[in-house]
Image (tube, rainbow, N blue to C red; front, side, top):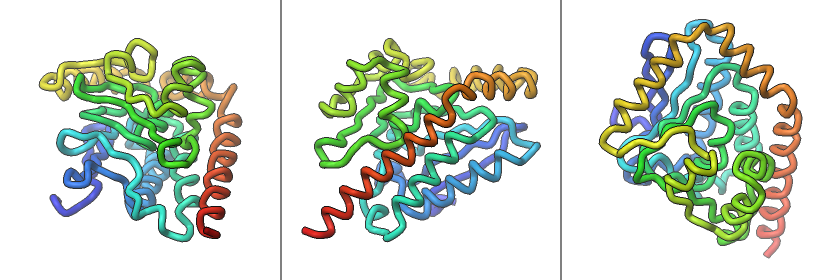
Length: 236
């Protein structure tokens, strides 16, 4: 199991998905993108699953995209499908952010319904530093969720946001001491899992229906901009 880069487990009606590459700070590689997409899409129609919880092994949530992954010819198509799986997932998505989050691990957080984080976490999207652009629908979700000024700091100025500020601006739902994260987060997850499933899923659908098409369009546009950058780089 220690050799698996993604570990899945079931707890009642909850599927727990753990990124398991601690030596690489849980960076997401090409096979992991494919596997995570399949997990989300399969769980969407699995009547035994009401909630997916995503977390990481060790002291990092995820350092984001493993740069080796982006060398694959169809990487951007895989990335688009990965993000789409978050957008269209009809049940509850919960992130337990057990440490720092970088890149795609940050931009997908607004697509979760609840985000429980450790005090030792920070949130970092160094896109302009890498000469790329925002992904994960963050060009739409960040201004909407945390405000245009904070979104500019994160997406343009490579600002490393501490966990306390992430809580204050609404990027995360709850913040816990590092040593209490698992206990406190799972108390909330258990509370949530005991709510009436139909009511929860329908309410999520009603809340998201007004902007789900915007998310899908934004995903496609961001990926296209990344494709232009990739094509230009390959000509050099």
